[in-house]
Amino acid sequence: MPPRLSLFAVGLIPLLAACGGGGTAAVHSAATRPPPTRTAVRAPVHRPPGPAQVQMLPGLEGVIGATSADLARRFGPARLDVIEGDAHKLQFSGSACVLDVYLYPSAQGREPQATYVDARRASDGKDVDRAACVTALQRKQG
Image (tube, rainbow, N blue to C red; front, side, top):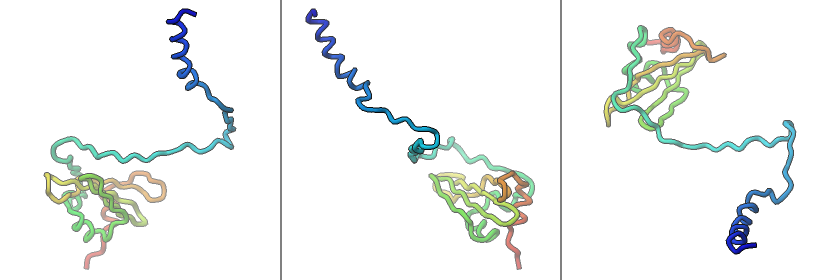
């Protein structure tokens, strides 16, 4: 073998060894296949620059623009309270529906205010009228 070719062949040996399995491969049926490995990754929250988009719909006037304290007075304690970056999500629920309220600060350093509301049935997750859900979940005043 010419010296160049033998050097080339010797250089390929580690690469070929890395490609080989070196052992027996495990074969699993669908019933015995191990579950896939899942890895949780925490990524920073990225939001477009500028003020949050505010949802203005009839029946949400007392909710949109409210702070978390205002919402607690109106609906009682939140079932879920999640803070991720500068976003804040409060969830209120009752037999009629589940209400998710998303709060963002209007400017750097300001207290987050409700800018968006989503509502669904607790039983099957189908969307419901947001204003009707707000009305159904409000605490009785008086």
